[in-house]
Image (cartoon, rainbow, N blue to C red):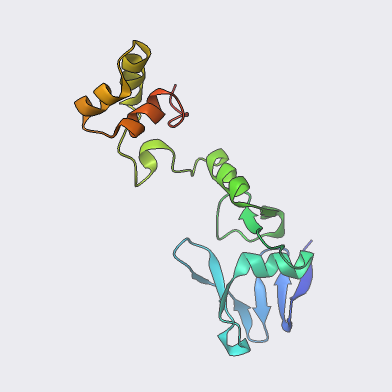
Amino acid sequence: MTSFAPLKGLPQYIATSDGQIFSPRGEVGRSRDKHGHLQVDLRGQGRGNEKKHRLIYEAFFGEIPEGKLIRHWNDDPSDNRLENLVLGDKRANFYDARRNGKSCDGSKSPLAVLTEEMIPGIRKRYDEGESAASIARDLGLSRQTVYSAASRRSWKHVK
């Protein structure tokens, strides 16, 4: 059953537990930011664009504590159903992404200079006694990059 709650400071706007927000003119919040989160244009109310999921959470549960964020349990930034919104922090959000297969581990990261295929070979050479510096020179990488991967401080998802 759908529940309703007024937006904090904007009683003419109503949030629903189904993830919608209505103004006197109808449903609002269909535009997306660069991360796919739906946003509500409240510039006419002197507030600017605000994230729809945050507005819905606050309407039902109150103010979001400083340092906390609202996570989408299923990692779908357009799914603003109340049952999908969870208070948390950046660390919990990261683990949500990993659990849902959306993390940027390893070569999925735009900053990666290694690949999953390289890691076993690097670790084998290091475990057999070759120095990280020697492996790094051979592969044209930094010693720290090789050491972190070889010592399993990074690329932990690769066995």
